[in-house]
Length: 491
Image (cartoon, rainbow, N blue to C red):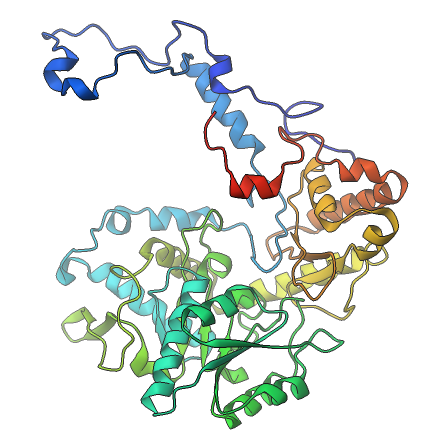
């Protein structure tokens, strides 16, 4: 394999639009007016009119189109590159679902449309709730949360109200040391104290550690299964028994649901609540903060606390009903990110039961195959059969050759691959969290493994080459701290 460029050898550079321009060039020219023209000061107040023309690029339409197309080709995305971002399931999603979400009856429907004029979308939302209930093994679902963390917040607010309704408010939420950072953040936003429980040597939750922190003040135990090391928590039933024995609730962070579809249902593992990242699992574009969706499923005892409004069906059709008196209230304007939910509905109905199971089976097969290809290339801290993702470590390369996981990630860009998640989970030093997803081919996985082999060889033979990467991107190494604290958003 050689380093590759999409359009030209060497560094991929694209001039600024202003640098492409020349005085007098125009992308579009209107014919002379055949009606009397009015002066700008006759149409607008003088104080808002420019005294000098705006300093804008002057370019032809052809140069303008080529410029933005070249910029687009510099992007890394699930449509153009391998995107093994662990814990996020950045997979290719069928474009037919985009077409369905773009149908006029969905895309142009005003959220204030009377119920009689919105029966189609209400029917879809009602059916999607039933589908998610079946997939999750839950008794009720709300579609309102707009993302996974919003789903966490919604579920924890319900848990808080649940315990308060029993006359025993609880103050603590327990999370594993491998948890996503949103778990403790959501708990803190709800006013809970957060207690961490350590993993054992096999990267799983330690039952003895969990038992030592479970007291009468614990409201919820939050866990991810499979966990963030890509490992299935085989003692989940014992964990659920312990949590329920102490009067607390079991919460599943559904970020890794891609590994469970059709194989096992969270409700059958003892969970009382679960959120679903439809923008990871069910065909919704993922990235740049949205659009997302974080439906929450709950068991029957928590149903009265669901947010409203609720879609209900009777002999006259579908209606948006107010929630009951124990509801936590509205958590989203109107009914949530409906466009994302339409995509999720189309994805589920398009695949069917067998197809959804195939998603999980393909994801697990791909992850284990890629892990096998990388054996001997990068250490695998817990080298056991994984689910949809696995953790490798650059700890030895860092200690012996000074090459960090971050630098391996940067070097992968030169080979045309996006980087896996790095330095997470925090319990693995110099972690690379790799999730190939079910949508990638055997050839892509082999090419990625070969690229990592070459990069690791470079790290041992010529570490400076990796430490200074990327070499073919328009920008090489940014000061990431300064970029985050002092972003320069203009030329």
